[in-house]
Length: 603
Image (tube, rainbow, N blue to C red):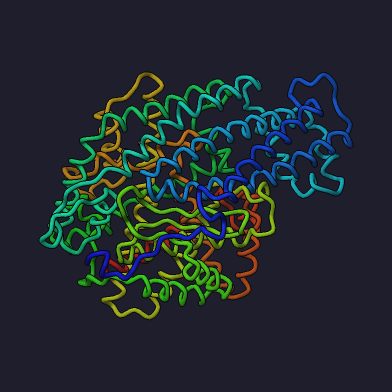
């Protein structure tokens, strides 16, 4: 089915934020941003804030600085976040827009100054850490930001000198960030001539990847082969980009006194190695049941073993594609079974054009949700093709928007949510839809729903583990030397073999999965993968509690979402009597998935 047959697919509308990139309002906001940063710097200069200050302040003196800084940084981050998202709305949907890319670069330069002042304050907080208890006991801004202050003081141990941190931030623009932008540009502009339904068309790589869900096996196989050939043409610059990013991360974590790249990731995720290892162990224990699902799928497709091009194949004898109006009604009606607040959020998103759904050349692949702080709204990007998988993606991203909705009224520092909790609402929303559909489905419909759900779940549990193993080995080997495209492909294939095992045909895996996943190309957050598994299993466990408690659960869940920036995952989980340090919780969540697999095999 062609995109035109799905109904008109929306582009997002941000005109209520600024009229355009060239408007007076946007230009004035950029000027105001720089003024606020200059004012912040002047404030810190006046109080001689640095980690090498000659005298120790009193509790009241330190509180004046802390309150003043937090008030200013919250206001600044609100404006910066809005401007950054607004410019990103152009860059991610049209990588050919030179003006948007120029403005993106300007904001990156501004962000360096912001980062320098942030590091300066963070280093100073470490020197007054022993005063924090007294400061927080007093009413005011510091008290309402106690979690942020304690976490900041703790993390100040892993900072280089002010001068080194300033230099690192400035070099990031021409270093890791530049490599990341190169990867994004290459992938968004890569396109392939592909014959579909008797007509050859120029397809962006994101649209070609979407054909992995096509009902026709010959189309899926040809798309897979065309995709591999396309990545062959850009593997060298992408390998250079990945080497550059990982090399930067290695250099900096050593200088900052970190154990390894995973160390910083765990701190940013607000968990420790014990929690991660407990979760990963439970996930590894579950691989046999996922391989059972993959073997069952292979049998349905008359495969001896499942080749990669059939990994996402639809099952159930249906080629149904959802139009956009059908999708909006489908999601909204199912969300209403949980709460009218959630359904209302979805209606606002659909009716106010918060979503950019059409795949097109120059647009980034995949999907994401970004918040627009000044208007308390979100914007969602997806590449909609009418598949049930894409319907689930829209629901997933709306979950992120709902998370943001629950945090309205909080300051920017109070809403800084770790990746481990950032997926809670999105996974929960997917589960709402899946479970509601299964309740009223016929056996034929049930098979389709289970297939769509298990494709996604297998990616988050099995494929995410392969990505974790891939990144871990890349860091270990990159520390010794640069890696070639063949090295990256070898590591990726070995990672897929060790996780998927006999569930997939080892002769037809996907050696280029490292090329188009933007998470690998981030210097700011390494090991972007495992938080998705945490989110899936945590969200699944919470949904099981919701089924036990019913409507009384809703307000507690919304409170949890509101406070994900003010507590660690282990503490928030404990409010629901969940212990994330014990394997039982993770195993119980995986048992929910196991039941779905058993039902799938039975059908």
